[in-house]
Image (cartoon, rainbow, N blue to C red; front, side, top):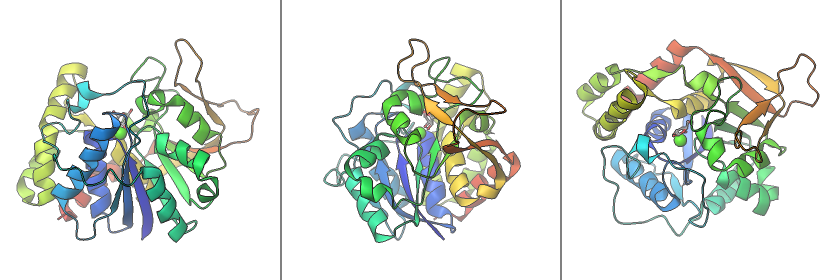
Length: 308
Ligand code: BDR
Ligand code: CA
């Protein structure tokens, strides 16, 4: 099994990604750290706790709280619901706020040097903070898989920028510029992964805690996708990042040089990848450019079928 820390901003697709990771026998989720993004930091922490409580895995991963001081450029409550988990109510008892995400990351990485993959499905604030305050720990991170950015697909929160990068572009820039081994799963790949109503049918029949929880949170997500984008299904971006940690062989990747725009008037938060035949800089990220979509879909369904 591979040890992973999930760094999430739940968010409906983050919640699905976490459920999948918890049920995937190839992954050992040692911690789940929250970060502001789809919702603010406090809500993201509460939601993380809510997901784990509802799914109630036998071995609870540790929870790390998002930094409430950070001000982010955007949220996505229009898509994920006022509290971020679509149709579900988060708990009101806060357990986790005493353990900041960056401390949890540092402790887990120290315990298993070079073995932990951090899967980031939200803005990269926690990793950027770790780079700054725990630089020696960062050297011990095995790999980072980040969901976000765009090679040639344009943006989703602005014409140029993908949501996670846009929210904290400075953090993304710091991560791209670091010596971390990193894999980027961009919109070019994830926007092709649309999950239709079959998922709801599957969940109905399962009768597990995970299925019941997802059946609660998902319907408003489908409704908004239909209403806003005219889609007969939902984006499941964040599940692709978990799949990358579990089954990298389904993805076609290429080493590329990438950086993040933090000053542009129209392009703030856009990722820029050097696609020239003779790139000017040494590649610093592994970028997913394609995925076997049917494997990915099968992975989502089969893993949820295994969940408790
Ligand atoms: C990302 O934006 C968020 O709304 C989703 O959770 C996903 O991580 C895609 O751009
Ligand atoms: Ca997310």
